[in-house]
Image 1 (tube, rainbow over the protein chains, first blue to last red):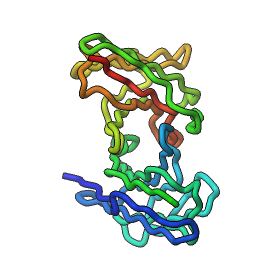
Image 2: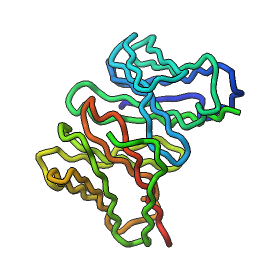
Image 3: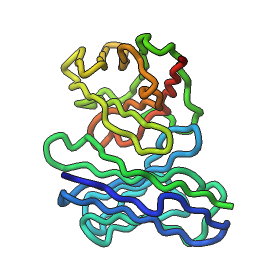
Length: 114
Length: 110
């Protein structure tokens, strides 16, 4: 069966510090990968998605970046965090075959920028 | 897609009553429509989907209705239980449906 992992679960970082959130998927190959952000009491905002290694599409211009160094690894980074970067970050994957629209979400990372 | 920047609307229901959560969509090209449930502090989970050529689909205690004429989708939950308390999102399927709407927060009153 497929599983998706995210770490860390919670993170408190000062303004101006760097960020690295990691997401890995097991049990599937060649997945589509996504990063979403959810501010408190709000909906999900798509940040990045990837259809393959090294292929990243950015949906929202910001001080965040994403990388996909391996087929089942997706990393969200920032060189200098802003207060507005606080939120709940969710990684998701979907298969490209069959019902490729169905996304499976990880447990999320709660980021607080102080 | 819908705006994701607004605060979530809330639906409050009595335990045991039926819940109806509504969603309006703008992209008529979606082949599927999907409902997700997000419990507090967790990632969204798939509940049920419906193909665009269907009007109704039933699952376990849930029913999704699709009205393509008015671009409206609804999720009906029968005999609402405390475990149904969550935020519910709808979205279109396919690569152009990657953005989620603002969702609805379902609150269950004892």
